[in-house]
Length: 542
Image 1 (cartoon, rainbow, N blue to C red):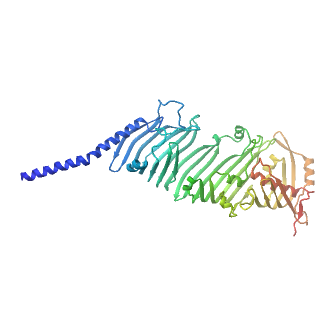
Image 2: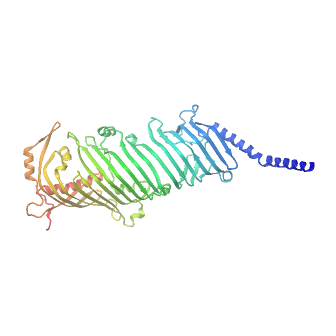
Image 3: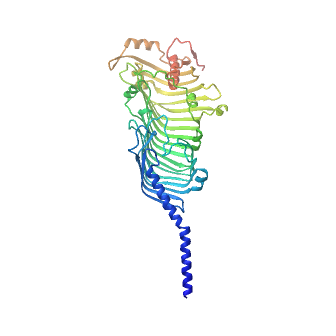
C-alpha cells in the first residue's frame, strides 16, 4: 500500500514538472507580451499622441489581444510645427479585440496576418491640415517594417467620426454611427505614407447621418442613412445638398454669378455597384434609381461672370472624370425642379418650374474601347411645365460621331402661354395677355460651336404687352405694345394657310452652360415663327 502511494506521488511530481516545463512558459510569455504591449503603448504607437488603455488581456493559445477603455489624445509635449497633416483630437474605444495573430508570417515575410478584429463602440475626432508633404503618421520613421496587413474579418460595432479643418476648426465631415462587417481585407504597405488597399467583401454596412462640407464651405451634404442591401446593392435615404449662404449672398461671396443649387432626395438605390473596382480607378454600376428629387436653382445675373469659365459639353465632362466610368442606367422619378433667375434692372427674380418630372439616362461611359463600339449616351425626360402641359425631351450623344456631337428633340402640347409670365414679365419686360400653345415640336443637331434644326410651333390668339420698369412697378408701354401686336404673328397657322415651319440656329456662347445652349437654340425657332419677314420659314405640307 505504501509502495503504491509512493508511485502515485512520483507520477504527480512528474506531471507537475511536465506542466511547469510546457505550460509555464506560455504564462511567462503571455506576461512578457502583456508587458511589451504596455511599454509600446507608453512609448506612443502614434507619433505626437498618447495612447492609454484601462486593461489589456493576452491569450497566446488563441494568439489574441484585447484592450478595454482605450483612449488617444495629442501629446502636449509634442513640438508645434511637426504636424503630420492628421491629428487625433480625441479617440475613445470601449473594446478592441484582435484574434488569430500569425507570428510566423510576420517573422518570415513581414506580413501582419490577423484572423479577425472586433472594434467596440468607438468615437474619434480628427483634425486635418492641408500639409503638402505629410510625414509618417506612425510612431516610427523611415521605411515601414510591415510589408502587408491582412485581416480575415473586420467587425465595427458602432463608430462615430468627426473631422475638422486643423487651421480653422471648421467641421468638414461627421458620421453619427457606422456599423461594418467585412470579409478579407488586404493592405499593401510600401512605406509609412504609401499603401494600397484591396477592397473586401462587405457583409454589412449601416451608416446613420453622414454630413460633409463641400466647395470650401459653400455647401453641406447630408445622407440620413446608407445601407448595404445585399452584395453590390446599396440604399441611401434622406439625401440633401444644402447651400450655406442665402440666395444673393451666395454669388457675392464667390465674386461671380453661378447657379446656387438646393437638392433634396427621398431615396436613392444603387444596384450592381462593383466597389472592388475602385482600387483600379473604375466606377462600374448597373443602375442608379432615385425617387422624389426636389431641385431649386437660383442665379443672380447682377453679378459678373466667372473670368475664363468655359463649361464643357456633357461628353467632355464625362471623359474628363479621372476614373473609368461605366453606368448602364440612371433613372429619377417624380421629381420637381425650380429655376429662378434675377437679371439686371428687374425688380425681382423670374421663375419657371417643372413637376412630375421623370428622367432616364442610358449608357454613361468614358472607356475608349466603349466608343469604338458606336454606342450612344441617351437622355430621356418627361414632365409637366408650370403645372399645365406635358413636355418631352430626348438628347443623344453618339459615340461614333465627333466627341462633341449632339442630337436633341422635344415637344410640348396644350398650354396657356401666359403661364410663362412669371419669367417674361420680370426678365424680358413682356406680358402675354392671352395665347394658347396647341403644339410645339423641334429636332436639332449641334456641336461645341453651332446648333441648327427645324421647329413646328402651332399656337393661336397671341397678344402681348410690352412693359417698362419704374422702380418696382411694371407699367405698360401702350404704343409699343400696339406696334408689337400688329407686327407679330398672332396665329400659326393663320386662317386657312398651312402652318409655318421655322429654321432654328444658334452659335454657342462657350462661357454658358449646355442647358443654355439648347434653350437658346429652341428660342431661335420660336422667334423665327412669331416674327414675320423672316426668310427661313417654309409652309408645312398638308
